[in-house]
Image 1 (cartoon, rainbow, N blue to C red):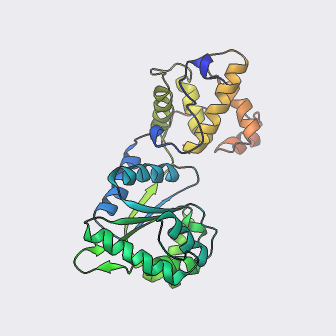
Image 2 (cartoon, rainbow, N blue to C red; image 1 turned 135 degrees about the vertical axis):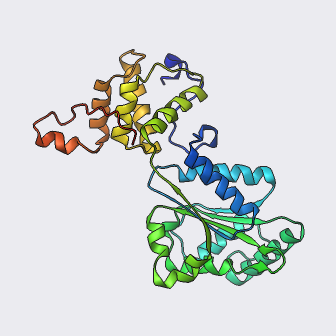
Image 3 (tube, rainbow, N blue to C red; image 1 turned 90 degrees about the horizontal axis):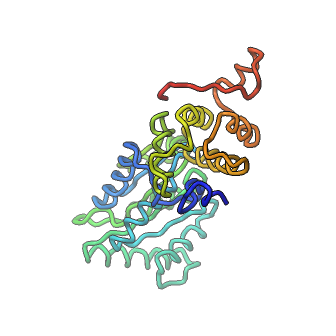
Length: 294
């Protein structure tokens, strides 16, 4: 709606994960490099964790792009609210296994055959599980057993990437999953963005859409957006999208703190200092612009 008004080639703050918009902060570069290294080096189990909205799915989309370009076979389990039978059925469909996909035994035989064939050709295969913190215990145990598929000469035949919220780490600490935990070779963690990173994140998305050296979001506004979103990329996208819509409605090409106040109310945002301001008798949504870097 507002793209023509601001001169954007496309929506800069679309909520859908898009590798083309990847903001390459040091932690995102490191996480992606670790994922690719783990696959290339046949490390077996890799875990990616981060709070809601920190960009885990975008990382996985970038990894999928790499795997497709490299011709690596992979299965992507995006719905983790499944039982063991459904888990094997999803793997069979994604890898296009020639077997009775509702039979766990036949899926395992076909999978093992595919992995051996790939290994003999000097290639590997990957299993990616998103939202892995929701997996049932028995599904996690099945995943652990898949990690036993290996060759003494080649190593792990299936590279398994588990991605989820911090609850996944706590789940893996459970005594009944200690065997799985011991098999995890690489761990990556995504943290919220700092003030500097949040500003660069917003500016990089605007530049990608055709507006470099932007003046739409003044520096104090960038700082306030970071404070109220706590550096969570998904929240930053939602807030910025709403701000641009509000600015378009009043025909303003500059975002103001007053606009942030309105968006904060509409989105029911919570941030450090908001309740403190109430106690001190200040307005519920009084600006709390901060110059801190974290």
